[in-house]
Image 1 (tube, rainbow over the protein chains, first blue to last red):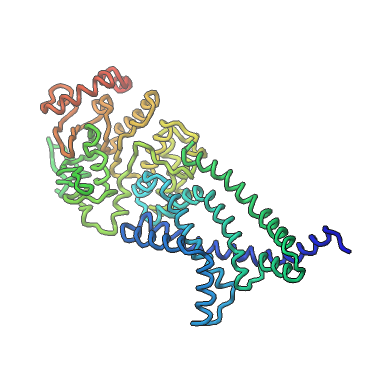
Image 2: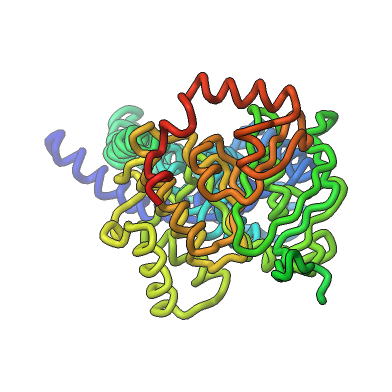
Length: 221
Length: 271
């Protein structure tokens, strides 16, 4: 008979194999959200009335729809109507779009906390608007955005567990495999909870520290 | 003789900036209402007036940081309202110094001063650095070039702000209340720097309430109120016999607030 420790260890070694999938889903989702979110934020802050309205509507939409609905839309929607889509890709797109709405908000706040004087000064040297954004505004805004962005990273890691429903073998899915194989409804989920905690907790801690740092930066001390 | 030149008393003065009937409003609020004046090369023009008079907006319209609604600004013989996309290039011919310094917080002092020549004028790195150090030397901030703005006092920040403008070798420098955000004991070092520039015959347009400075270097003073020029003339004119009632009231209020202009900024009398 195996001890509890052996059970935990064997379950852990099985479940942890899903970690690369979880992490790459996180990276792609967050990356996609960044690639869409940052330009949207710039459009929202510097794009005049029309840009502002468009981005506001987009953010509203993305943040109001549960990510699971987006996953189903991409997975089943595209699956049956357009082409065979792998679950991984569907989840990546869904989480990326969802995250883009949040990241756009994060970067908007960060861009706005860079005072308008910075833009005036850059432009008065003869820089174009884009040069000013690239060289003066964005580098400062990205620093301001770090704490909220780290929180978004934490959220994204947890949200990748939704990939479970379309059969992507990430951490959650593998925990459920263990449940199905062992008929143990508790231990596998405790193990996977522990894994998530160990990854996410340090990130939120760092975010907190950066948050205090940001206050210092914004105050210009 | 070119468009911007005229002979006065046998001396040929070249007009660097010509402002004609400039108007600017924010929504329904008219902020600048038909301002016109000329700035001769190598002179200092001082603009003063109560807050909300449109001085800062006027200054930002001169380098087209804000697009005027009507009227125009000539930089020498270039009509800045008609240059289209090239406005960024012409804007680089105006240096600007801000009330709140607006140094780039994420860059060292040196990078703050280098970035204009490097990025806008596309000057190679080493040469841009040389220019930046030269400008910093001029404002006596060369020893601080690896610091960040957050490590400087207000007066030091403002001197770096001036160096940043100088590094572009501008035709005109616009000063937007450069000493208003400074502690009293730090004002002197900034004024001294501006005084040095005036002596070097840099062309300057200064929005300021430092009347000692104005008296020492201004060739023309312009009093603005409610978006319009109320009165203009030499410092002599303003300090001996201002004509307009509003001007008189404002000047006496300044004296009440800051003490008599001659008791302050002693260095001005020492020149």
